[in-house]
Length: 287
Image (tube, rainbow, N blue to C red; front, side):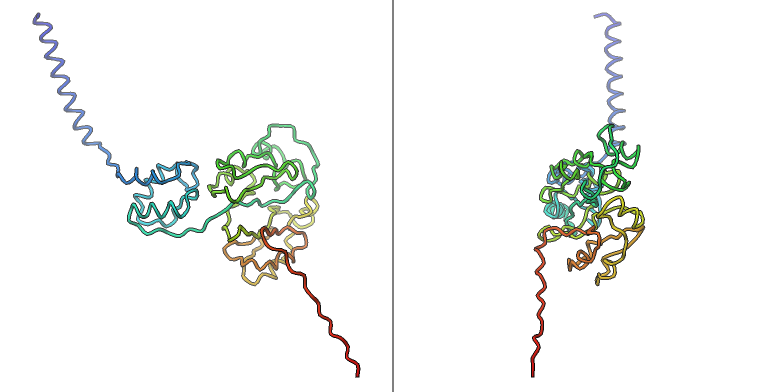
């Protein structure tokens, strides 16, 4: 073997050793420790990566849970209390009770109540149509009916009704991930507290115009008449920007506001029919 080859081999060997030593110290200097509990927590998460927790996927949420001092303000809407209790058990923390939520549509403007006044012949996308003009009706607040919310849902909890032209929410499938809320450019979908037997009472309208124009655009529009506000005994109703709103955390389902609303903009769902009032007339007793 020639001296040149020997020198080359020795030089490369020395260079390799020096490089290995440098890489070792660099790796030790910039080593990032990862808590092994992150993998354990991630394993119990639903792996939906829907962002409903407010973080970038289940892995990121698992990291947040491990590093958080308490679970206050943290929740996996898809997994619910079962997943959060399991995560608390792994991390030795106290679980926080979070009321389950469900999506509701704050619009009841079907063609029966909100007739079409124009025809949209563009891309079937609510965001695009919303940016171009008020829509195919005279209500600039109502549902555009292109199904952006349905396409955003990963859990088959929504579908478009071909008759009403409105999205239908399937409560049993809804995980309250919030994807449909983000997808709607008119902010017509809200996550509300889920009650027993899936009962709901809410104002199915988002029209902030004054009473006359709102009613002209849609027969079931809220006209901010304040009748529901006056009849509510639990401070569950507020009126802002010409629109009534029912707070689901305060509503006791007394249903007085429903019968009081003159435009039927307040919807009640999954309630038994009200019993008719029986009027008892006193018979005249003759002397």
